[in-house]
Length: 173
Ligand SMILES: CC(C)(COP(=O)(O)OP(=O)(O)OC[C@H]1O[C@@H](n2cnc3c(N)ncnc32)[C@H](O)[C@@H]1OP(=O)(O)O)[C@@H](O)C(=O)NCCC(=O)NCCS
Image (cartoon, rainbow, N blue to C red; front, top):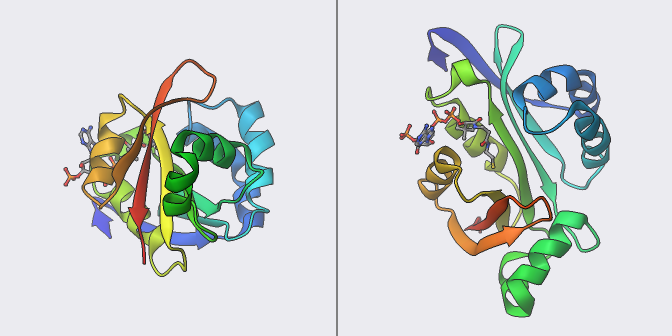
């Protein structure tokens, strides 16, 4: 992919992700470094963990990651409660993919990197559905997802921060 500078998208193994947490934190300003240091090492061990980075030369310009969700995980259980029994069967079947984070460094936005990372992380995965949460006022993200086949499956969910989120789902089968 060429956007003025050459962008390379590639998958990173857990060890490389952990060695690049400083850069990950630069791209993820709404989470503190302490929180990133706490959650990412936990997420890299989850089944189906898949992390892709977009590199401009050697610098991380964007990243995306997710894993297989399952009962007992904090995010999963809150979304399952909001979806109810039928909704959970539909959107959180065994093996579903939790599309956890997608971030592009500000100066690299609107050049197709976010869309490319989105497509790459889902490409070829063996999962019936994918689910994600985003803030109800995050128009760039909602527009990206809506244009790629996601739909709103829970219009409002407060995870406890007081900031309203919505949940989107996408069929992958
Ligand atoms: C959301 C985000 C990842 C998009 O990355 P990006 O590289 O700018 O996205 P792309 O250039 O690939 O754009 C893909 C689509 O996203 C949508 N989009 C991106 N930026 C947008 C904006 N500012 N306003 C409206 N739509 C926007 C458009 O639908 C766009 O499609 P188009 O290019 O055909 O118009 C980026 O804005 C970001 O990192 N935001 C902060 C972190 C975040 O909110 N992550 C998502 C949390 S779930």
